[in-house]
Image (tube, rainbow, N blue to C red; front, side, top):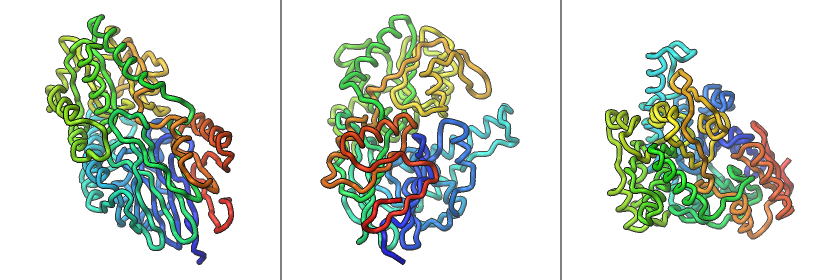
Length: 464
């Protein structure tokens, strides 16, 4: 067998969409799965979570995760339940976050199935979870941790290393190499100007580069996020309403809280009560201190997050927030309003015009968040249609993803041109915009990856 790296690369997810990150690398008869994410958003995408995996899970020798967000890690318990028995290679930060996210994901899926069965709004009888909390717990026993910039061998003949990607604690770009060539996965790249996370490391040279394109067709306006957030909170408070901010529990929730505390301290918004209603986000926030080398927050910032935010503990306190007696700011997961406690707040607050719903991150096609940002006048929640009369706004300037200019700058740190670049993890328009920008800026061979496309790499040749 020819010693090639990789023999094949197959795009099992995040091709033509911004979700379901899964890449299968086959090298010298072994299989390595890079990322193991859930498909979210459009129904035809979510159905892929229930379809048989494109290859037998038992035939996969190892998994490497670039970071802990569920669109990169959340399918892992199902993969293991269906037969995968290998090790899962992660950074220390990802190892700390995965217990929080996967346990919560399993719990919520069981909870949603019970709720659907109790209220009879599922088409399936009975409604079943994709996996259980116990299955998530089992998956955590297979983690193997590796420090950044330290080589390890997930499968024989393939040497891997992680470099900092910014974005969230533990997020990494993944470099794979052998004597025959190299492959680089960007993972989700953070912003150079992110207020919490350090910027991504320079890109290590590689023959083939797989780059994300979440914001491949946009440019963030510097410092625009805080101003838009301050304006939304101030005008909502002036009309006696409350602000609901759906935010990803890991990364964005902490960044939003920090931004609101800064706005309060600077006198740019009223001193409203600030709530975090997400047990997962509460636990994730505690990891910022232990991973100080990956983030920029000062000791004072960390103390303010601990002392000046009201953390919602139980279900009774959560229910009380559905109808706050005075203007408040409520941050709750999930960021695209696909599940979690934010749905109960949305159901209670969306019908009232004095309130505001503020989105602070990318909204994948087919999610409630995308529908609301697009101007939907009603949204389906727990089996019933709820009218939307509250103000809805979206603040792109607070995203934790690199924009087009920053993605190009990261690619520009390569000291030699790659043989081929594949653009993934973006909606079609964003992915193609980044493809064109790469071609125009660098003149490299670049294409947008297609779902289930297989790329063969031969030594001394371009991929076919």
